[in-house]
Length: 321
Image (cartoon, rainbow, N blue to C red; front, side):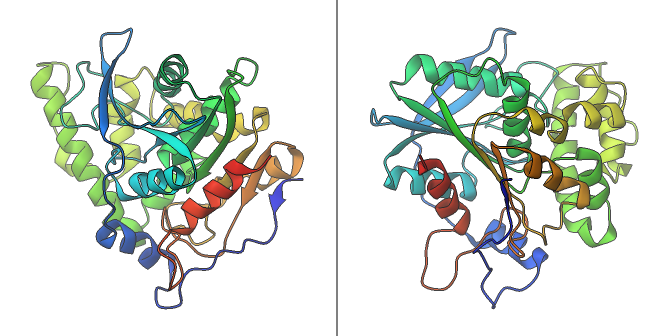
């Protein structure tokens, strides 16, 4: 019954509340770039993914997957990379389609369930790195990708895959989308939509006549955006169909690789259905930890500790035998 009843993490008293714990690291955390060797991975469909390595030929490799409208330079990716490198891992971080410095080549982009791209990165790492074991770490959307990938591929995982950790995961996309549409979350919604609208405009210039921009600036929610763009671009009927087929929660019972999910109870992005307690209760491989605080991809350290709690927790779980 791997539902972890008591989490040892508690946010510092000077930063109360899920919103503050979410916003503070996004605005103020600065992390030196740890991954440095750039590589472009060409995909079978003619598109590409941009990767960055920190590799010294070590026996352990961690593959890091970022969140919505982020990239491999994001502080929580580079912070996690540094923490794992200090403990003896090599690291591979990657940008989803369209999240690097240039747009991807095809009309389709990344989305919450595009596990085929994660699979391509894993296969490339296995073929090109000498590691004996490979761990997966995902944040938010990247956590959804990670958990869905592990459930989808339960019977065909490469034996080099060792463990996985995910933080702040919208396990039920419909639930999280409704949560983010609340007035209290308007600051996050507008930031995401501003960047997503810009990508749609770029795609419209690249593919004239294939996207209708009428009313784009009036879109106010993920439901409206996913209905209008994400779903049809990627072959889904509508937002509801996209959310239902790409939420990781239905795939969690199939996970056989030792996997830890850490979702803070005060995460402003997550509603009740994003906490898969029953699945953890019934699994021997899937662990769920729900600290009272932490916000969304926050997990700020207590005073006197420079390493974020998510980094220490991930390293602790991945190192277990």
